[in-house]
Structure formats: structure tokens, C-alpha cells
Length: 582
Image (cartoon, rainbow, N blue to C red; front, side):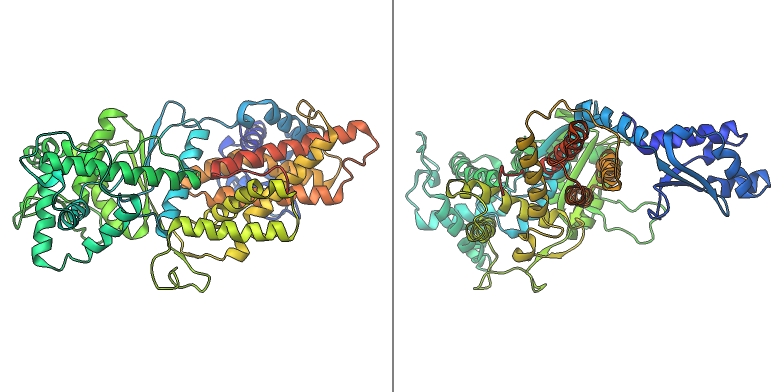
């Protein structure tokens, strides 16, 4: 189904052509003066230069060839603008097609294409903290948006599970429990099925070990353990599997609580087997060159204003780094999934790293020239005072604590205001809290830092998640009182609020495509805030259930039902849902 702007533009282009002018001048845009008109075309101004006549003359000629039935207003105004307002019939026909079409007629622009979204960035043996919130929910929203627009989507958490942190844990555990069979190189039996630590113990072991890195003797043990693990030492591999099982189980629980779900739980360890052949290939092609004992890939290109540092492939001591693993991960993804597009959602401070890696991947032929590689670098979440978010003792706040705090805050409001019966408090609280948390984050441009303000995010008025949810619940309540509404057709608008709501609904498809193009879920938030505003204005200025004309009432119901369905689709893409009551 075409976007409404495309329909209007096609009609305008034909009118230009019928009037004797080039069709390319007939581009229509949404009016920047909604007090004057809904859409406008400025093509006559440009055409005047080519045809050497007054723009108003061209505009007047063009409007004579527009179908008056499609518009409630067509006017050519000085110096040569063409202003338009759509007719009630035109809008009714378009919205009825939206209502009956699958997914509201949105074009599946990603059909036949595969996208890998690399987000989450969790490290095993460490709890998720507030720094993991943004990549998780931005990545989840972008993945869901791509899926809605037709892409085959693969979300990969890309675990940090293969570096020095593993050696640190092994070395620390050996000091604490040296008699464990994992440390006996002569042991040939079966290792215990149960891990020698709980998740809480594991989360204490790592920071303790990390604090010892300054000790040369302990640091040597940790590096040696890392080396032996990666070389396949049997006992260390068994310990590593315990670490993975305990940690990933806990990570999945926390991501589930955030309604974030990955199709793949792969990590750096899965990329490791691809490194030797990849490095050998790069050396053979001459893509990788020796520089001060290290193998690097020069990535500066002609036209760069500043020289980019080379991408380090193998350090002078023979070890690989994050760039090596990221490139090997691309090798694996291209072999297994052949994606057309790969998105990486991480802190924006990694911009240079990904620019180097992307250029190295293209230069070495790991990806094809037309493979899209994009880094969505996000800003940081600060406290309400604008300073880095810290716990009272100055530590980094755990993500589960943040979710719990938001849930407790919302629960208190739900109970205090008696929003729902006692038996519905918990389910309602969970949905409102998740909507408040996610919308509060996603409504900000991903690259920008923002201040986390629990009271503002959980407010039921203003540009907030609860306001969007309340709008949906209000409509659901009206629909429930009306009865069977699912098959009711859209009718022509009979009031200005009804037409404003209809026009807002038509912006759904272009808003989704704009959000995809810019990798910006905040554009979806901006759209549903506008749509919710139009719904509420229509509600306040229209007698819906009290309308005595049953045909008119049915049209009102069909209109708000369509708006409700679109709002629910949008919040599902953003990763939250509406309660039944509020």
C-alpha cells in the first residue's frame, strides 16, 4: 500500500504533466503551516526558471488539472505555492484500506533481506548494570522494527566470554579452592555436573580477582590461565562451561524481565575458531601488514580529513584483541547467515573502533561491498541531577535494582490512586513500569545523553510511557462498552478533531520508515505521542458513546479502534505493552 504522500505526489505530478510541465516538479510535502493547509507543492517556483514564466501562472495552470473530489481545498497562492487540504472521502477511502490491510498496509521494504542486530554486550560473570539498559532496549526496538518491515532478523547478544576475565576468575578460584579437580592436569575422570560456585559468588569472585591485576604474580597466573583456556586445557574448559551456564542463566532471567530476547546467545568464544584462517587470509592478500611487530590493517582512505589509526589485528605478543574478534564474528555471520545488514548497538565512545573494523571488513573482503554496516553509538543515562548515575555508596547501579526501583515507584502510585482493584495491582504495575522505563529512554535520540528522572518518566501526563498507555486503555474501555467493533468500517470525518486524528493515522508508515532509516526509535515515540494527542483531543471534543446517530457512532468507534491498534503495534515494536485497566 502506498504512503498517502506518494498518492498525492503522483496526482500532482500528473497535473504538472497535463498542464504541459515536467512531472518532476510535482513533489508534495507535508505543510509547514498547518494553519493554512495540510500539504503543499512548491514546484512551480522551480519550474518558473525553466519555463521562463511567472510561478503563479504555472501554479494556476496545474490546479486546473487536479481532481477536486480528492481535496476540500486547492489553491494557488503568491508567489506560486499550491496549498491542499484532503477531502473527507479521500481520507476515508485511504484509512479504510489501512484498516483492512495486513499490518495497516505498510510496505515490507525488508522482504527477502536479513539483518543481524548485535546488541546487549553483556559480559559473563558480571551482573547487568545501568550501562546495559540502553543497548538492550534500543537494540531490541530496532530489531523489532526491522522485523515489522519485513526483514529476517537475528538478534545476537555477543557475550564477552573469552578474554582475560576468564583467566582472572580461574586464577582466583584456584587460590580459594586449589583441590578442585579442574586444576589437576593429571585428572582424567568426569568433572562435577554442579558448578563450584553460585551466581552471587561468581559475581563476587570477578571484581576481587580484577582488583589483583596490579600484582605481577597474580596477573601472570591469570594471563597464563587465559592462554591455556584458549588452547583447550580440559579442566579450564570445564570450568569455563560452568561459568557460562551459571552466568547466562542469570543474564537470560534479567533480560526476560526487561522483555529483551535474543535469537542467538553467541560470544567471543564462538568467533575464536575463525581467527587463524582469517588472519592467514589477510596476510596472504597483503591486507594485513607488519608494523612494529604487530599485524595491522591500514584503514585510512582517500578523502579522509584526518588519518585513522590502523586496525590492530594481532599484537606484537601474538595475542588478538576486540577488533580481531569482531572481524572473526563477521566471518562467522557471513558464512552462516549472509546478512544484508549488520547493526551494532554500543556506547558512542566506540565509534572509532567500529569505523576501523568496518573499513577492515570491507577492505579484506569479509563482507561484500553492498553489505550495510552501521554502528548505533548511544549516549549515557545520567541521574536526575545530570551527573553519572551511581548508588549511594558510589558504585554502579545494577540493572535489576533500577527496574525494581521503578516498579516500586509505580506500584505506590497505582495503590495510592486506586487505579485498579487489588488483585490487578501487580500485573498493571509491571506493565506501566516497563512502559515508563522504556519510553523514558527511547523517546530520547539514541546518540544523546539524558537524565533519568523517575517521577517525570512515570507521570500520567506529558510525553511519557504511562500517558501513551493510558490513551490505549481509555480507548479499550470505550470499545468494551460499545461491543463488537472489529469489522466496523471507517467513515468520512465530520469534525476537525476527527480529521486531525485521521491525518495523524496516515503518518504511521512514513514514521516507521523514517525510524528505520535513521536507526532512531525516538521517531516512533514522537509519532505515537502525536497520535495519542490526536486521540485524546477527539475524545474530549466528541460525544462518542453518547452519540444518538448509530451510524455516526459506529464511525467514531471504527476510527478510535484503528488508532488504538496502531498505538499497540508501535509500543510492541518499542518492547512494552498496555494493561487492561488504568
